[in-house]
Image (cartoon, helix red, strand yellow):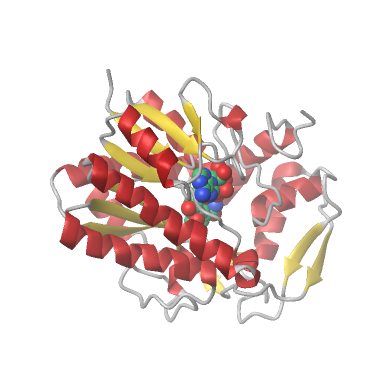
Length: 332
Ligand SMILES: NC(=O)c1ccc[n+]([C@@H]2O[C@H](COP(=O)([O-])OP(=O)(O)OC[C@H]3O[C@@H](n4cnc5c(N)ncnc54)[C@H](O)[C@@H]3O)[C@@H](O)[C@H]2O)c1
């Protein structure tokens, strides 16, 4: 039998792709998710425990029932704009929830943790490419909640011997080629799914938030990384922690920035549809440009993204969105 790993948030977008790769690699994942955003249908062939990180008793029961080798922590609230309006809910879920999880691990003697952090910890970047050493000055409560947990992990490493790998993802996009799982947030705040939903007529055109940023066409620039490439780095993280104490941070991105308009054009090429859009005001908490320097993950973890091209990423998302198996547009 493979090693048992806990995947918190494994019914969500990135977590469900992680679960698939873990199964393919011979691990035995157990999913813990409150299904606030996740989908039971995204979890097939592995146990799904429905529970909340804000419920320490549920966590104690989970850790008593299984001897986990490591914990992947994807469960969080993720909408930057919402975090500006409801910081209380974001800090409680993303900080208190994660602390509860770490405490349950300590009680059970589990000492390996992989944490989903974000490019939002960098705030407004001072350099074109952002390396891990770039100052971390997040400009919204979502980013601050993630930065706080990164600091907690450094301290827990020193004080309690918790080993951790922190991944700062840039913009996750795309879907598994199986067509079985994909992105299905409600509401959807990410650009790639929203462009494709507009192409399908499932929403009334695409909203672009601001065209007066200091970028080549005035719209925000982001670095898109295929969800399965994020998952493959997480597998490498387990090997990394075998031989290393403490907390280690890695960016995950492709190092290419695309403006919102360029993503729209790429989606027009992929879909063959002249996707309608309108320019609205800036959204609170958005940085103008976020592009990763991921040299560290490539050289130290031996990580190689398999689907770095933006059109291939959008193509895989398009295949999912045309026939989603679950979520608000599945017709289920
Ligand atoms: N999607 C991106 O582009 C992106 C970028 C950077 C970082 N991240 C981080 O990656 C992680 C996964 O993102 P995602 O896009 O898959 O989000 P998601 O919303 O699809 O998945 C998160 C999952 O966690 C669950 N969850 C949330 N709060 C919970 C709680 N208190 N108890 C139990 N389960 C809970 C949700 O039901 C959901 O299934 C998040 O931590 C997010 O901050 C995502």
